[in-house]
Image 1 (cartoon, rainbow, N blue to C red):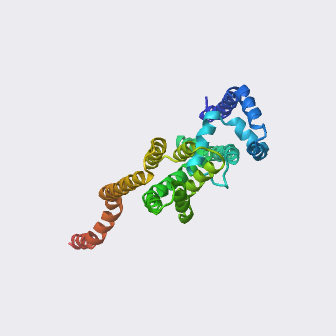
Image 2 (tube, rainbow, N blue to C red; image 1 turned 180 degrees about the vertical axis):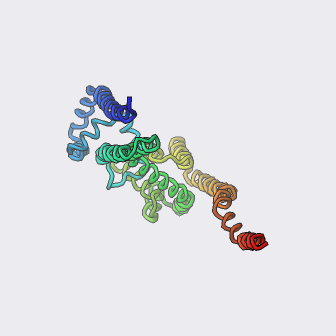
Image 3 (cartoon, rainbow, N blue to C red; image 1 turned 120 degrees about the horizontal axis):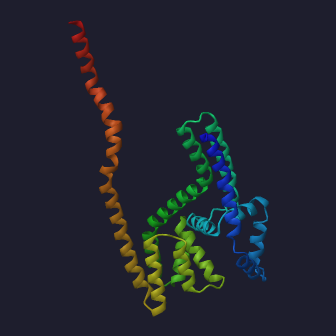
Amino acid sequence: MHPLIVLSLLLICVPLAYLAWSFLSVDRKGLSSARILLSRGIHRADVEKKANNGLVEKIGYRLTPAGYVNKLDRLLSLAGRPASMPLGRLLAAKPALGLVGGILGLFIISGGPTPILKLVGLFVFFLGYFIPDLMLYSKGQERQKAMQLELANTLDQMLISVEAGLGFEGAMARAGENGKGPLSEELVRTLQDMQVGRSRREAYLALAERTNLPELRSFVQAVVQADTYGIAISRVLRVQAKVMRVKRRQRAEEKAMKLPVNILFPLLFFIFPVLFIAVLGPAVINTIETFANQ
């Protein structure tokens, strides 16, 4: 059978099988129960329903398995939930981009039935579908690195505020108001969670769940234990700030030790060849001219 026919059959059968699997794997009973609970006088449920009333977004929810939706929601949480890309719009954009990638892939494959072009076409198709995931992952990594850099200074500010007489929540509010990065935004959101009725423990654990930084998780666990057993929060902040400064210095030393290894590749493949051409080029040309005249 011709390879192009086999590829066409795969492009038809695989999406149909995926659609059938996603349609049959939906927990309709659990979904209906959740909708009934959310519709009991909660304004957020009405807002969520209005946000998901688009036809394309409904198709995106229908085509995406529940586990994959949770994974995308986790990526959005790590990326700070940008207002320009809510979950419904993301789920609507993925099939559309996948369709565009599939059309481009078929166009590339039609240019020549070579194996390389077929691989390029498949790569374009998968790239179109998964490019929102890559963008969210990259934005989330940048955001987590920024929070990691801000953590030590933020803890120092909170320690100064607590030793000056403020409570822990007041120190968090002061650090959130004075800061401008993602960590200050997370602190403000934690305080907002407590203001709407969430307990301290739940708000602190939610802060840890919205990040993937081990340092911030250890700090949240220390604060939760201090709040549970009545330990002085100033002592916890002093110890945690010292630990964060040590870890920041260790990360800087680790990056400095990795620098010679990272610079080895561009040095061998980009700098040395140009240097050899500039130094040995005239000598090689003179040698060739000398032997040519003899």
